[in-house]
Image (cartoon, rainbow, N blue to C red; front, side):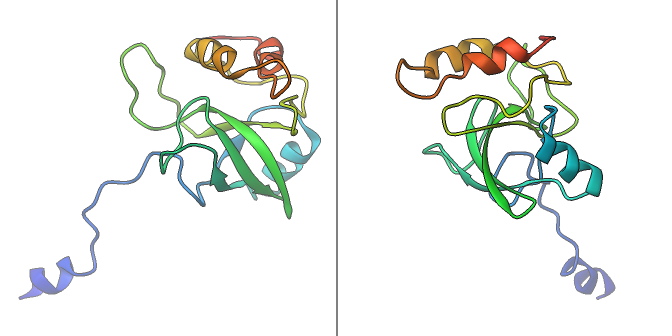
Length: 142
């Protein structure tokens, strides 16, 4: 009887390691708002994911709430188990961008996957969001 009572209070489902709504992210660029939020211990949370799926992965655009403001960002690293030759990170990483796709910071502190280079070049178009600037400020690729 004790085990049946205890099993009601223990969740046995696996931990979700995908980017969904209300997921905490780590800002990896040197934007001022990102540095302040991470220093205060209040990381940004996902409000919306700009994909048809219900979850986000590497290269997806997200809307985050950071220090009482809404900012857009690009996911550059996830904890989720990845396909072969795609690195798995220890935290969910994001680079903050403005509406035109220009990053708010001018340096990315962590290495980003090479897969991101092909994904973001495909999603960049002439009169819209320009993700190539994110690739330009990245110093290391994995």
